[in-house]
Length: 380
Image (cartoon, rainbow, N blue to C red; front, side):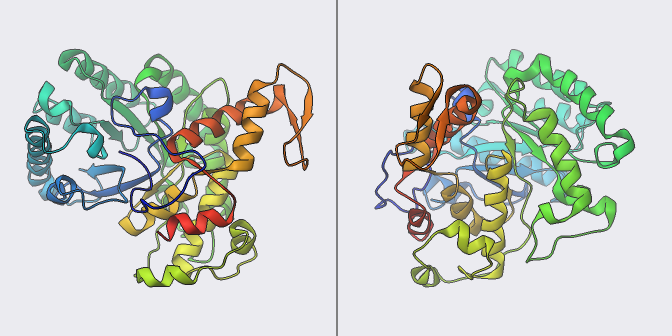
């Protein structure tokens, strides 16, 4: 996989890398980007093998909320068939691992996870990137992670876990700190198998009977913002070194590709934050929220519509100025230096961790010239 393949003519300052499930975890955790959730019953394997889904680089096939309970067995059969077809195509040289989106399974419960795991063998597991654990609480986290470790050992492959932090015990202020502390301690011995931490923004909203409108971001909903803030505080610390993905944006509008030809050629951040129209309310809201995600330390985002992929991934790209500042900081032994643009100070010690994350994003999503390049990138 490689980000931005829908726009092959775009000229990067530094091209994004090619990656697959076997890429080193320290970099792979930055590569997920826009992760598309879909029902486990959905048949997409032919489109993958025909390389039709140029926007798609990571996906989750869901056995939980996206399907009815009576659809679970058909969904499991569909996923096994999906993995078999891809394994066969790789064996026949039709595609390679680099052509396959990172593929995860969102399991339903610990019991269902264990049951489904028995259907896997090394051949199928070699196609799969890992599992998503919904409603990941302190009382079931150990079991999820123990099964994951057992599966890795038995099949001699690397399958990652991605817990979703959601639910009442995190949402409610009187239990949140203790729950997050317990989850942090439980995850620590399994850190080598944790690729990403995900946040259940919609689940949190349901517990307070609220839903952000199309012209608001998740950060405008005070109770949800507090949940997200504390999750970032526990798991976004430098010493924890987890990559955390932004909550899903729920709105989408059908649009024609030609609409993108009329985008303004100016500072996209300023235009969005001052509510100047870029495309439409649904996409503008998504872009606005991704900018706020990035400002708060999230990398990538859960998406529920394939049209969102290019917008989320484009905004993960790094501008030349950010990249040059980061390299300047990392190459400096200590002290303060004026940036290459002479518009800010770059200081080794306080800016080092920021610079390391920027360089990782630059590898995964590429380096672009400036703000206007974001528009050109996702309009491709």
